[in-house]
Image 1: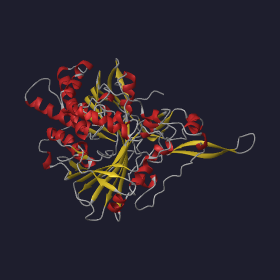
Image 2: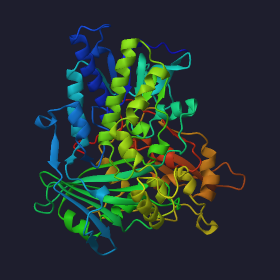
Image 3: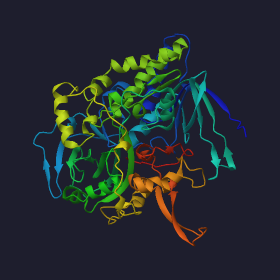
Length: 564
C-alpha cells in the first residue's frame, strides 16, 4: 500500500532539540535577523527553520551529569546569567579514590577533574530555557515528532519522514492513524544525540566513518533529595576505583545542587570482557560505599536515567557533512573524552553549523562543498583545541586502567600524541569474551534486587525515569534474527541483553513447547518489554552480533527527565 504523506517545505530542518540542535536554531535565527535588518538579499525567515523533538516536551530526553562550561552559552546568549536556570557555580572540585571500605581525596585535584568556573546545572531546565528562546525567535518547533527515515534527492539528503502515528503492535492502522510527514529542507541537521538512528544510517550509507569506529560509554544516574547539611551546593567530586575493576574503564560523580539535592552517577565504557556484567547493578553497588551511604541516608530518590555517550574523540568523529546535511553534537562525536564534558562542545558545533548554513542559504548552495565549511570552522575553533589534546585518551584505556594511566602520562607531556598516534580502537562489543561452557545455563547470575531505600531494582528505577510508551504500537527495538538469541547467543555469550540494558527491556523467558514429539519440552523465547525503554541506545551499541536496531518509537514516548 502506498502511503500518502503530507509534504512541508523548509529552508532548514533540525532533527533533535538538545543543546546542539537548539543552539544551531537560535544562532541561525539571530544571523537571519541581522541579515534582514541590514537590507541584504535574499530575504530569509526564521519561520523556515523547523526543529523536531521526539520527546513529549523540550528537555524530556535530556540527561546529563551535568557540569556545564559556560563559554559557548556566553557566545550564544551574552547576558545568559540574567535568565538562564543555572543551579549553582562549582565551588569545590575533588577527586576521590574508593576502596571497598574507605575513600581518599587526592591532595591535588588532577586537571581533568578541575571544574572551577563551570556550573552545576539541570540540563533538562537549560534545554527548556533555550527552547523558549528559539520559539520566541520565530523558529517552528514540533514536539512529539521523531525522524524515522531520511529523504534523498539525486543522492543528496533532502529532509526526513517523521514516524507514523496510530499503528497497533502489529503495524496495522488504528482509528487515530496519521501517516508521518515528509519534511523537505535545503539543509538537514542531524542533532539526535548519541547513536542517532538517522545518523547511523547516513554514516553507513555514505561511508563517513573516521579511522576509528566510535567508542561508547553508558552513564547511569539518580537525582536525590538529601538531609540538610549533607552536601554543599557546588561541591563536585569524581570517584575512581571500587567497584570498577582495573580491567575496565569507568568512574562515578557526585554533584551538589541547590536545595539539598544531589546528582550521582556511574559511567562505564561499553567495552568490557564479561558479557554478563551488569552496569545497573554496578551503579547500585557503588551507592553502598560508606561515603555515599552516609550522604544518601535518610534521603529520597527523585529521578533515574541512563544515557550513552560517545567516547571515541577526534579520531572517531565521522565526516560531518554531505550534500544537504550536517551532523552535530553527540551525533557527531563532539565530546571531550577525558573530561567527559560535551555540553559546550555540542552547543558550539551547533553555532558553527548555523554559520555554515547561513552562508549556504545566502548563496543557494547546500552542496557538500559549501557545507564543508563547517569542518573548517570546527578546526579553527576551540573544539579542535580541546579535542586534539585528548585525541588518543580513551583508546589508552581499552586494555585496563593501569596501561591507560601510563599512556595518559605520555600524552600529557606530548600534547596528546602519546606513544602511538593515532592510537587505533575497535568496536566495544568486540571486547566481549565468550562464556565458559559450565556457565551457559540461563540466569546463572542472580539479578540485583536492592533494599528499596538506598538501592533499587531496574524496574523501580525505570518508574523514577518517568518513562512511558503506548504499548499498542510497533516495537521500536528491531531484532533482525531472533533465532540467534535462543541458539548461538545462549551458548556463546549468555544473552548479555539481559544485563547491559539498564531498563529491564530484554528478557529470556522460558516457555513450554507442547508440539514436541517426545512430549512437553522447555524452550527459550526473547521477550522485549519495549515500554520500559529509556532511549539510552545501549542495546544498539553493545549487542555482540549487532542485530538490534533501535528506531524511533511513536513521538512523545520515552523518559521524562524532569529536573535532571
